[in-house]
Structures are given as C-alpha cells and as structure tokens.
Length: 95
Image (tube, rainbow, N blue to C red):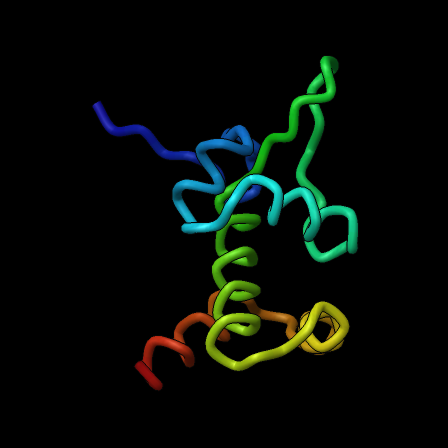
C-alpha cells in the first residue's frame, strides 16, 4: 500500500510542522501574523500546514538564518519567487 499526500493538502498541525522544519511554534505563528505563510484552519481554529507550506518555511528559515534577511526582506523575496522548489534546489546546490 502506498500513501500519497497532495502537496497542497493541509495535514500537519503546528507542533509537527515546527519540528519538521526545525523552528519554534511561536516562530511559525509570527510568520503567519506577518503574512509569510497562511496555514489552513479547521473548524476549531487549529492551524494545518501542507507540504508546500513546509517547503516555504524551510526557505524562510534559510533566508533569515543563513542570508540574514529580515521579515520585510523575506516578504519581498517571496513576492518575486514563483517556484519555491526551484529556490530550494538552488540553495542545496550552494550547499
């Protein structure tokens, strides 16, 4: 049996998402407040992140921690980035 999850399907609660990307839950909340990510909400207002959200969070983490961008710099970068996967590939190549 093979399980496949649509990359846009929101399935990860905030604690799991934070652990997977190596950030604190409060950081994810801040990124949401600043408009960098928009997790879906359940009827009970629980945040759910998709695989694509996790990829975006990994990119944000790289831009802030390795490149020194602030939130506004990250916002600007994300506005001009159409392909998160390609940006992550480029980061891996720079290694």
